[in-house]
Amino acid sequence: MALEHALLVALREQPASGLELAKRFGRSIGFFWHATHQQIYRVLARMDADGWVTVTEVAQSGRPDKKEYAVSPAGERVLAGWLAEPTPMEPLRSELAVKMRGASYGDRGAVLEVVRANLADHRLRLAHYEQLEKRDHPHPEALTGHELDQYLVLRGGIRLERFWVEWLTEYLESRQARSPEDPARSPEDPARSPEESR
Amino acid sequence: MALEHALLVALREQPASGLELAKRFGRSIGFFWHATHQQIYRVLARMDADGWVTVTEVAQSGRPDKKEYAVSPAGERVLAGWLAEPTPMEPLRSELAVKMRGASYGDRGAVLEVVRANLADHRLRLAHYEQLEKRDHPHPEALTGHELDQYLVLRGGIRLERFWVEWLTEYLESRQARSPEDPARSPEDPARSPEESR
DNA sequence: GCTGTCATGTAACAGGTTACATGATTCG
DNA sequence: CGAATCATGTAACCTGTTACATGACAGC
Image 1 (cartoon, chains in turn orange, purple, cyan, brown):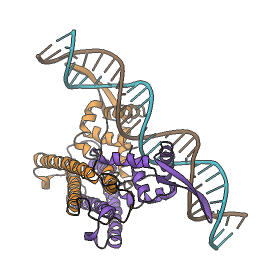
Image 2 (cartoon, chains in turn cyan, orange, green, yellow):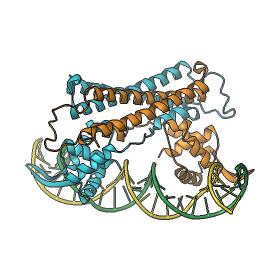
Image 3 (cartoon, helix red, strand yellow):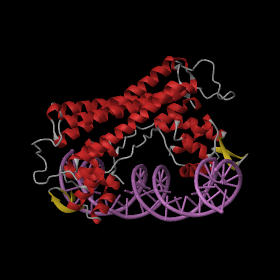
């Protein structure tokens, strides 16, 4: 029950059509939220039915019409109410972490490859975010209001990617220093030999 | 399609019943994964039907019987195959971040309260993880095999909580220094007055 | 005329959450 | 006897993902 509210924030920043919202969810707001257009259409329809948004058909030159959504006064009240509610701490769910933890039960080299690939992705994204920071917020100390909020959330995106890069680097360094193949001692799993390369 | 595999990892570490798994998912494995007992029972039933696990009814003294699940050879193959597959980078989804970004559209003081509460939670959890680290892994440089994997995933939990503490602290410091009430200038929202305290 | 993009959607399914139901046993 | 804990489950619902469908116009 939170995509609704993410959409309300996005629409208060700038009224938009379903597709435009989907694109924006790949960018700025997308540091910490994501949604596909199908989902957005569904939720938008419900929000319209509930009177949280208003719709205007907008004719465009050389393109199909679009429906532009904007937050209604009722939607503003809903948003303001939601913002003041406590948010429970959400547990992170990471498939990669499960693989790291379970690496002994398969081909450890393959898991290291998977981790390396993820590390590369996170490095790329970190570089991208840092570029955005430089380009869009060259003077952060002067920011106020919503612009400051946007900047601080981007900072979160940067810090999160740094977390990934540092953690995965620590993992790879420990794993590569203390292997390959973990010579001798594996007290668990006496009979089976799970470390064979495929 | 990943709870299955998380359960396979957990069951290879130690065969267990549905409830025991649910409890473990609140602890160690729970740094990066979580599931309720209802969900676990459902998935366990499917895994049994698919032949990934074997079940043994275990009579207990002074307690109801339990069904102990263990990974079957077929399950081991499934797990090994999954471990070698690439994992796509999962986007974090954070309600709190949406609130931080949208704070201008409601009562900013209330949002700061929400952030403070979350910061306190993350500090607590960080302290707990650091305690686990000290207690369960006093000599990390000597670890190998699965024990090293466990330690490194715990390290990830610690780093993640540090990320939260640092980010939310940065947010609060910037926000408290550069306010309260962001005197004057709010180019957005000329008519309405969303900053009133509740 | 074909391909690509903009734009909106439907349908089926998979995954996760919440509420409820049941039964045994221990402890006060 | 009542409450708490262990243990297993069902049912309803909500969310999210994937695949597909449709139509208009733009450019080659």
